[in-house]
Length: 345
Image (cartoon, rainbow, N blue to C red):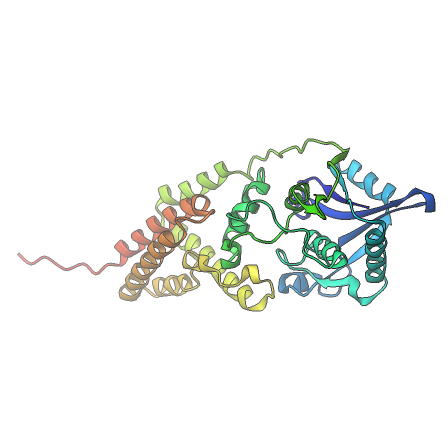
């Protein structure tokens, strides 16, 4: 009986790896893998349910041979840690897995941090042993956001996207095991009944993750695009930029209320992506210089508050170029619309 930890991939669903449980009993011709990460693409309103946070994930079982062949095909490493527990405990875990598999309990509502393929494995093992044997042993002094950042190497815009769509929950200290390699590392440091909880990790498949190279998905295209907006100094370019920010802000605000994903709630990034920028654009279109100026100054104040608030956050440097660009654009808008006092000689 062992925990399998699968390596990182370059598809969005595989950025963080995967966790599963293997039951091997050669005497009874059993070699099965239990996987808590399954979902059905044919689910009605799949995208809406995923965004809302009530998409049902479920546990499935398949042969070890099929499982390992899939990861071999994807060129992703697989590591195995055998559990050093009694035969009675092994049988009970096996029974619990099968009971879950054949009941309505096989379904669960996916949560990025609290309920995923890794946390569900931790839960069922701890439930079987009737004790919180597996607890987090590393990175408890870091935030969830900080822990996630290294997993996006080679995927710049995915890193940027998660940085601005996640709210305050991911700025909490990372006290829960929610990533596969966190579990692997914690298992290595876990003891149970005065002995190691797992045997030394065994490598079943060994592949080096290839970091993708992209001409556009990198920090350079990001800087060039924002640099173009700053240097070109055209009204219509500034308006397009502010319009995009406002639409994103409306989306962040809406999804924060619509979605059950707690990670998306309380998103202070709307201080940068303010929905009220749309009002500024409308005021500018109607040539209302007085209120356009006031809204530009208001957003400069919001931008300053935002900068001070996130200066110690993990994503400060990745959004800093946008802060700079927004500041330049808003100053230009304010200058264009500031009431000029005539000089009488």
